[in-house]
Image (cartoon, rainbow, N blue to C red; front, side, top):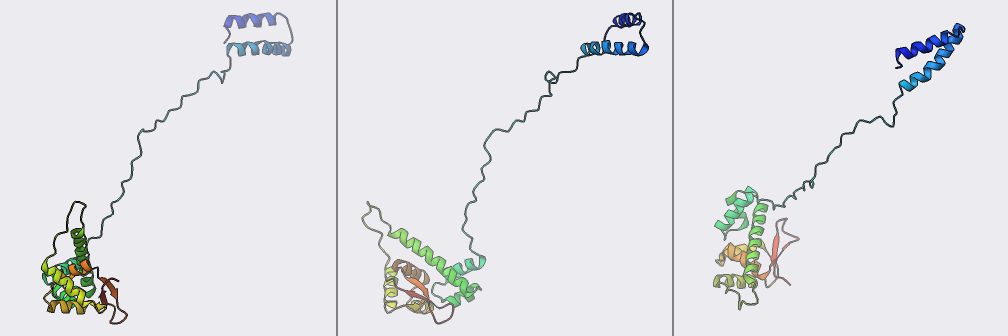
Length: 207
């Protein structure tokens, strides 16, 4: 704002000219308008500081890596575990008898027998592995050799149903464990017969 004294001097000087009221008003407006702009300059947008933006900081560090879920083999069911126990406790019994003892289905006993056969094959492969420094593999027990020879002679004429082989092995005093071990040693192949129902599984020598 202009000082009051300056405004009074300007007003008095213009009034001394004895001009018309309208002309006096125009002169005052023409004089005071630039002076007011100079005394009260408009803010310069370029000089007006803008409010600083808040800077967002990102958290440093690597993203969390998702842990890969470990693949776990399915745990055997309770029924199959009972079938495993029954097969180990009664190695000479047939599949149907084991199913009755374990109170499980016929198919469960078949699957349990496959599990035991798989374990026997693994054990046979472990026993048959030799290193360069090893001179010979451990000697096979006489009972196991007898079971191998018996199974080889039994399947020499062609494939036979598993039930028939198991019944014949029981009569020959070859327990279930020895029979499974002999099957793994000889690499006996299990196939499904075209006749005899869905459970008619046959064993045959390789080749």
